[in-house]
Length: 513
Image (cartoon, rainbow, N blue to C red; front, side, top):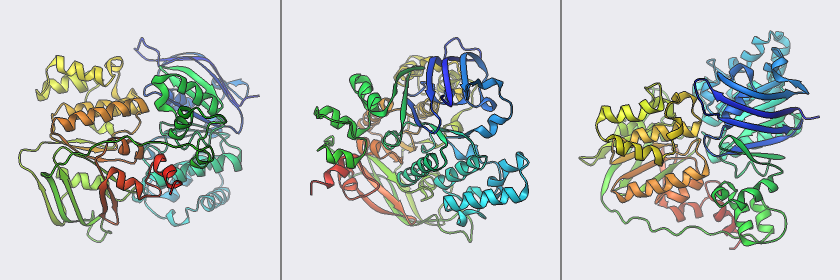
């Protein structure tokens, strides 16, 4: 018998006439690793929240959800322990000051005996190798460390099933792979069922036992990863959702099983290609940093030291680096929100900066998306109603104009925030993780939008962990490490020289040397 059965589930938010979920049906077997993916706004987050009664949004639900053969709503408080959840943003899940307190919090709420609590925490900390973090403040941790703490906190309750809502969205490539491997280890060693919603599916397809793909609130395809992969490839508009090495294999017409890893792709003789793109030959600097040094507190370690960075007119520079390397701090310095203790920063006269924060909710001040866009455009007087409407259509936000921004999916929130930034008509765009929560299709549209903005003379500095998007859209890439910029190269040179911060194409190309 399946651990979880969803039968003909539909859901519409309160005061909304349009359902977010429509006739959803699928099973999750006990001990399975299930990937839930799909287009932005297709209902992945909403579906996960239907499975966790404590955070279920208000609205009209139909259909039924069975857990262990019994309607989910018939369970009492046991589901708090039975079904755990890890959110996209670990800051929204951590509620205490230190790692030790965070791990103990959930057990204290369950009135666990102190001796039992200490034993469980000691065991879990040893499993995760987190001994060095125990006395640290939560806010001192990197994004990857916070996600590990959040996962460990859930596992301490010994759930039968874990729901994860894009847990790698804010992690650098190394931390993301590490987190996913930990998750697979938990799945295999503890037999815990995993249902993970993800947009970055390149690594998750290889780990999953089953894939469920949602489109427009409905199940488009479900089943074994290879079957879903082939179903997506048959639809030209959905091919972008197929992992890169798998798409190259299917495009080649080769026979055999679809590969999901570089190793499998090499064994099947798969080769890929990189899009050829001419980088702008801009020589006029619009932004220059020399010898920048910054720390948050007098005796704290330096976040940035001896940092040099130049940005040229009409280019897109992708800035990469591990969680906690100081990328977002650098953006704050450029915006004047913080001041460097040493060094010089120069921005060419007449430039207007626009900033997209990593957390899109920091941009929201109205009760509806319509207010965030149309009212804001009217307030700042940069776009008329017709121009604003064209932008709304371009970003695909027509259907959510009357929704509260907090009720949107992560990708829709990101779209709304980015649109509000563009309404300011900036000449230099500072983007902090602009693709977070966005599906593959909109990333293509965003890449095209950024290309057009460059043609209009705008310059873009983009902080990102999304290697595939950087490869697709950047002219140059830079790596921030040890407080400084260790490399500034063209896109092709940067990815060719890296081992982890690289693309599927370069990994396959390495075999040819």
